[in-house]
Length: 291
Length: 291
Image (cartoon, chains in turn green, yellow):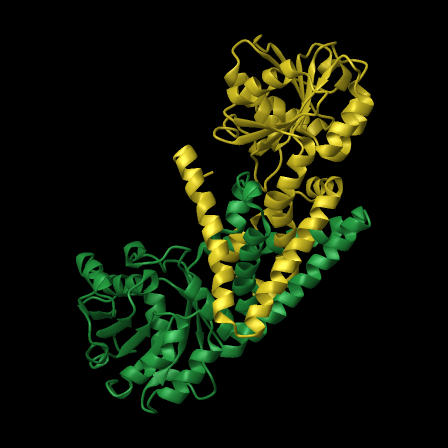
């Protein structure tokens, strides 16, 4: 596999700024270009030296790149693909870090030239914070990263992209876009919706008494609103299915409480506890620590 | 206020063992007796020196106490009140650390002698772990503790109990049992049910991809099943109301996604984010750090 020498990251928020920094750390002699349309972010990014060069011309930013990573909200991808398509070098790899993958694949096949290789990426890293000021070169250490491919995706591009994320510290797996969106609706998108609903269901007075249980279980509800709106709207069908499933489970446990059915209630809670304890145990086994 | 010299804790799990240790740390010269019916727990508790004395006779354990703290599952309170009622010194204070308070008050007025003072306690501390092996003398440092009283509760007993929890490191507030149960249904019991439902709604395959968002938002689902069954069953009406409210909110957000109503979705998420960010900010202001 050829060593990456030119990487461009579009969007310098928490993820984008971390990708540029992690790339500088991982690849000696690499040239990492960061693009952001916001002047204030460019100033911060330059002051933090997150990239070899921070530019304000998106076409120029990609013209010499072997790998281009979109780290902007999903709803901007179509427009960005159109903006960069004529400047992309033949044979380059384009990826993104959006949390849904069906829609990016659709836009890529619609807007990107046939001689560039699109592969989806979803690094499971980040936090409820945002902005280049929170970016860091070790954000991906020990994180999972899911790559997505279709039957048409170039095999060598997948391998190169795998190596890229591994060099940044990730464990990499590969899925189909639709498989990805189904799975992440359950473990990421639905918990976010549940967290927002928990907060909205509680009165201000009650919230004053919240302890670490509430704080932890709703942490994700403090995430950036536009990013998450994009996620739910580009994974609408699975989000709706997930909501229906959650409402069904809430109805089941409600019935056990209404009927004072201690055995049924305990079985329900025990099932959840066992399933969750299994995840935690597997994470320990795999990595030696929790992420 | 008279200094406490004799404290008895019934039940030596995470909370009970932490109360005995914190009491030994807080009150010089105090005699702290711990009771547990389990021989294996008595052995561990003695090895860890969590109390001045660990005994296996519940009547004997309370016979010289000024303050008796029940730290067993809520469903055991009625039976324990009956077991200790004839051994309680006149004028002593009886409290508990159960997470619901209406039912304990009912049992106390039914089973406890008229010459002892019952006040409810709910220290907001602990974790999803259990057992005396996780107990520690600083579990209550910086924690909130809600005391519950009715119109009949002895005012001096409330003051003494306030001083007790403050000495253990708590910020103390006082509420009615029904006010308490309403508030904690929203910020504690409902999030737990939601967490269990999120886990049960997800497939095993999906769970393999869970990241820190899912892990954090479902942490409480790993809590002890019998303790939590007691909580939901002794706070059934508020739990059911909470579930109905949560199902309503999930329906609202589902509608915005179904209709591709970006504005409505963003408003919903923005409301949750603002409410939650406000809690976090208040916690910072109050304490200088998060709990």
